[in-house]
Image 1 (cartoon, rainbow, N blue to C red):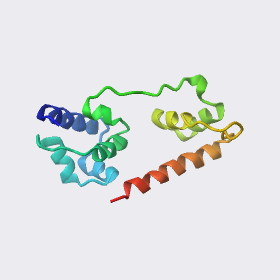
Image 2 (image 1 turned 120 degrees about the vertical axis):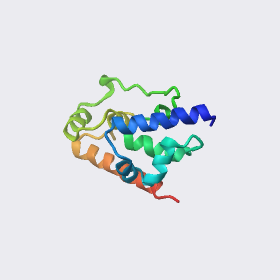
Image 3 (image 1 turned 45 degrees about the vertical axis):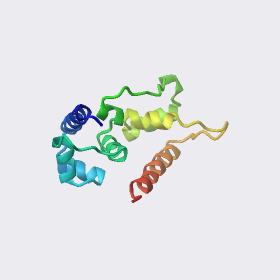
Image 4 (image 1 turned 90 degrees about the vertical axis):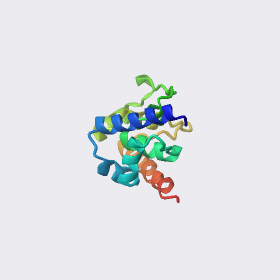
Length: 139
């Protein structure tokens, strides 16, 4: 990354963390990164975080890596009409973020295999969240 891009990324990380109302320690706990490393990312012009580090930070802040690096983001547009009523009910009940709702709505099912209950949607979401820990725990 060029120094100008790093400075912009540094600023975006700091701004996003502050917007989320998080301290460095809180963000460190959510990402598995050290507090000192996060401080360095926000202050050191030579810091060059990996894509994996940016993904962890973005996930914790409920934004995209593109938001952090200032790139144009591609969005998969889910129309309200594409969201099954039972998923909408589950999303309201579970207070899902737009990102979580879009993720679940984007799953393509074989005919007749679509979840028909809020309980099944809960199981699917919990399974997806749990599977992410396998990637996060890889060395």
